[in-house]
Image 1 (cartoon, rainbow, N blue to C red):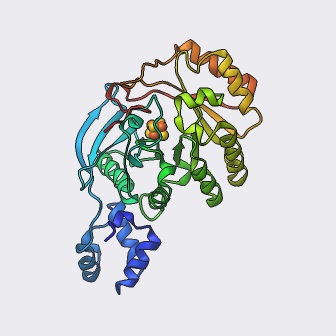
Image 2: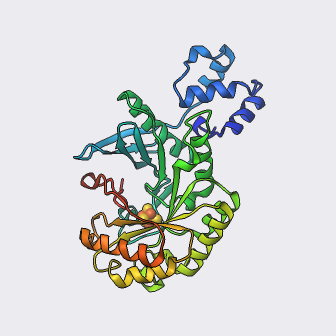
Image 3: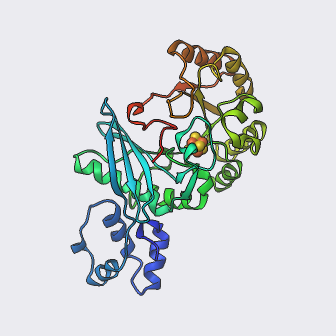
Length: 337
Ligand code: SF4
């Protein structure tokens, strides 16, 4: 039997109907499951009885580590089969973002990423992604804080490699009758999974799409992201163009800056040439250190010089991502269970 966290609102209505309960009760059940705005006493005895035979996905905290600046907290959560994953809470004073895992481990093998080094363990179900969000909202409420404002699918795993479960989870997370995080506040981060981006374009979803590029030629990108051999840069950028055309949304291009590998003026010029005239926004991410990868982040001056070249040559917006939670291994590419 599915966990209740696996059910979209429509699926919950259908399930109730099939089991002889009026679909109208789905409204109250969603509020009970996701908003804490009603209690069991607000349900009819028949619905209470139905609910008592159902389960929700359990995510038990194994470790809880706060960063020294107090702005990031990493939770290691364990599901019923013993599989552990990491989920990260970032922000402060009512502006909280969840960084959610979509898989345990990852099959993509990016060389600078601790999750990639773990290899692929398994996909997470929609309910296991929803359970992470639910867990963080419950945690925030227990500290008297506002609920999550944003969700980024940027934790462990390649979300588009787990497309169907991802789409179900995001439908539940964005449903205004439940958790209610607007699609425009939800970001899907991909290493460049072309079949998944095509499906997103066809679906016309309003989620933000972030594509990790990191290399301006196939040879350079192959060395960092092995799946570039399968989904090379030209095909990837063409797919992003189609995505922007269909969805009328800009694609965020993520570029992890690694000293000596992809941070020179020459790299910036070649990246700018690739991106000029495209519907993109570039996000520069100075590398976060991980065990087993020797690379280092560039100096601040180098990052600023790189930003300036892209801005002036490609004439596209460029921002530098704030590095958060590095000291507790909660930054991009650092999650390893
Ligand atoms: S960077 Fe993302 S896609 Fe690449 S190995 Fe790490 S989790 Fe997987």
